[in-house]
Image (cartoon, rainbow over all chains, first blue to last red; front, top):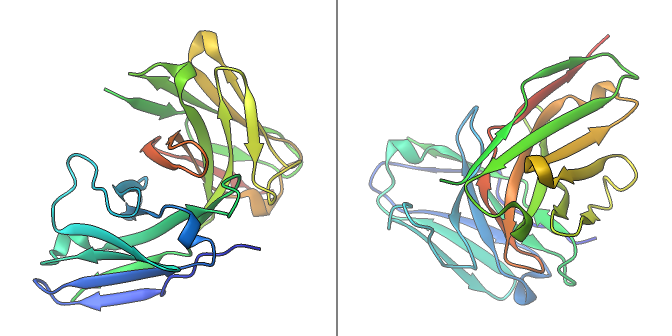
Length: 108
Length: 120
């Protein structure tokens, strides 16, 4: 079955750049999406269609795609960015949505 | 303003049934799919299924097919998630969210979540 794989955790110091990857066999044929989820809150969309940023999301959030890997990049990380980040895509037919296991971003 | 407001927390006993609602406002209810996502305690997000209120076309995750029922009431612009014969393993936060992007696609607006606790 299709799966999306993320690293369980990423740690960076304030002001540095955080990169969170998401790998999956279906990614060359499907868009990737990223959500931020703070504890006790609903997820928030931060990147859609690989690299597009919704209105209101800071410019320091960016996305890219290469082959079977999506990457969420957070430049100039701030303490407020500490959260869990989930990638999402679909299977090759587009009929089933997939979530990655999530990555906990820790700001040191 | 787009809003999805879910019903309140539920405490159920094993074997009981569950019916969670998701009241939508701020956009045309029948023009966008709505999905449901489960998050078990301390775990990640799991896609359960989506429904198109316009014609009630429904797609379920293979993991949840036959286990839950997703429906809508157009007159009340509300989506529902139903589950019968609850088990302790159904304890989770359940989110509704507006789906966009056609095949595949993504969720751009989310409800606040409904915490369901199943315990004897």
